[in-house]
Image (cartoon, rainbow, N blue to C red; front, side):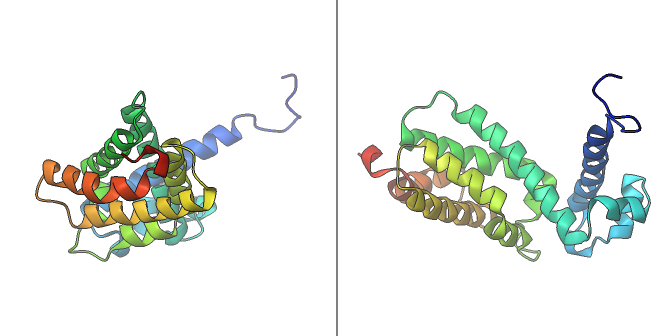
Length: 197
C-alpha cells in the first residue's frame, strides 16, 4: 500500500480507539450498576472481554480509566449542548439553554447521574473540579456568550462547573425552579457585562 511504511498497521490507531471505547463502555455499564469506587480493574476487564494486561495497556489504573470515561462523556455532552444552543444569539438565553441542556443530559445518563448521587462519595464533583477538559469546554461555552477578558472567562467557567455540580447533586424542586435559579443567580454573573440588561 503506497504511503504506509512496510510492517506498519495503518489501522492501529483506529483499533486502539475502538478497544479503549469498548473498555469505557464496559466501565459505564458497571458504573450504572454500582458505586464506581467499588469497581476494580479485574471486573472491568471481565466486563470488556479482555485480559488485565490489555486493560492496563490502555489505562494505567482506575483513576486514568475514570478520567478517560469522564472526558469522553464531557465531549459527548458538549456536542449535545452545542446542538441545543445553536442559533440562540442572546447570551442570557444561550446560557440558560446550555445549563439546562447539561443538567438534562447528565441526568439522562444513569452512569453519570450516579456520580452525583448524594448517597455516594461525590466523585462527580471531584472530577468536575479537577478536569482540564471540563474546564476548557466550559470556558469555550462561556466565551461563546460574548467577548470578555480570558481570565474572567476562565473564572466564570470554573464557577459555572461548580454551579452545575451543585444542581446535579442537589436539584431544584422541578425544571421551572431550576430555570428560575439559573436566570436569577447564574445569568447575572456569567454573561458578559455587555450582554446584561
